[in-house]
Image 1: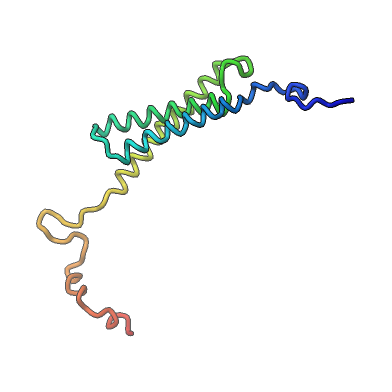
Image 2: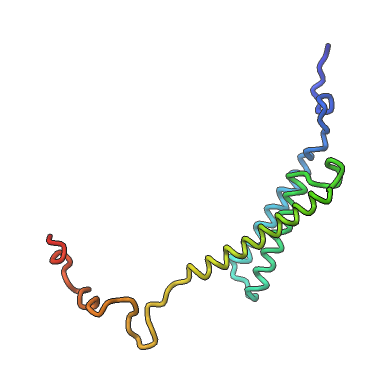
Length: 145
C-alpha cells in the first residue's frame, strides 16, 4: 500500500498554516513596522513628542494585528472565523499591551531623569558641611591604612 505524504492525506488543511509567501509578507510587514519607528526615533525627527508617541503606538498596534493574522492565523477562514470572544480578547490584549507600554515608559522617564545637584543658591545639595573639606583629605587616615 502506497502512503501519500501530502498534508491533506494526514488530515491537515494545507492552507491552515499559511503559505511561504504569506509568511514572507507577514515577516516583511513586521520588519517595516519595526524599522519605521526605530528610524523616527534615531533620526530625531522634528515633530511634537505626542505625535511621535502616537505614531509609534499606532504602528505597534498594526504590528500586533499583523502578527495575529500572518503568524497566529487568526482570520475569517480559520475555525469558522473570528468569534465575538476571540475579537474581544484580542482587543483587550491590544489595549493592555499598549497602555502598559505607555505606563512603563512614563514611569521610567519620571524615575530615571538625572537629579540636579545644585539648588538655587549654587550650593551643593545633599552633602554634609564637612564634605568639601574631606574631599581633599587622604582617605588612608580614616581607614587605618
